[in-house]
Amino acid sequence: MKMTKKPQNKVYIVAAILVVGLIVSIGVLHRFSTISLPTISKPSEESFQAPGKNWPSQKKVEDYFVEKLHMTSQDAKDSRSLSKGNDGKINLRLTQGTTLPALLSNLEYYGFVRDQKALEYALEHTADTLPGRTYALKAGNNTVDLYASYSISEDMTAWEIADQLLNHPSYFAYDEYGYMFMP
Image 1 (spheres, rainbow, N blue to C red):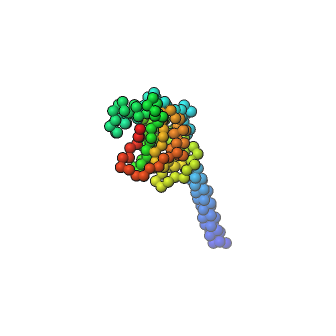
Image 2 (cartoon, rainbow, N blue to C red):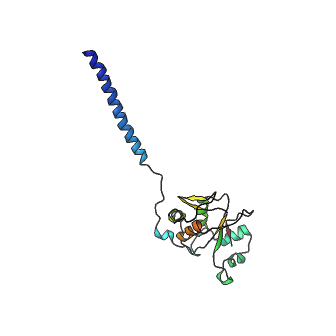
Image 3 (cartoon, helix red, strand yellow):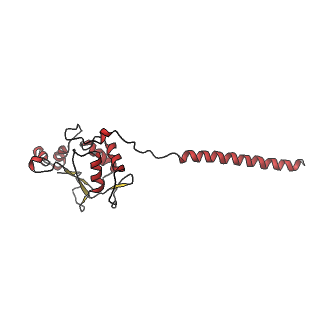
């Protein structure tokens, strides 16, 4: 009888090890299955507000016009002047090579948004009514099309700029210029 108990004991030991291993495995899998990718928490309501032209930023888009488009300072100011018959907006052109982080950073750098994280949040949480074209930038499940221009100003909230970028592109064919901002 002693011989039959030893194999049974081995079976119980192996079964116990398997059960303990299974319990540990389930616990480990459960732990990893509850880990999610970081999501952007909603920034303060103030960070979504329109910055306005007097918002302190590193540079203004008129500086860009002078540096990159070689306009005179006066021409750069006049290009958006309401007194000259313009609507105060600029055309933001997105071409190949534009990335979402670069776009967000530039819009904050030139004073179009108060906080790039607020714009990113708005892009991810605004209704996107247009299907993204090939090579569109991804903001969560939403898309911002490239080879398009968007009419924006510092008087727009992050939500309004997000709506423009997601739903109001003006498409253009490839061109050699590739400027980020146009008067």
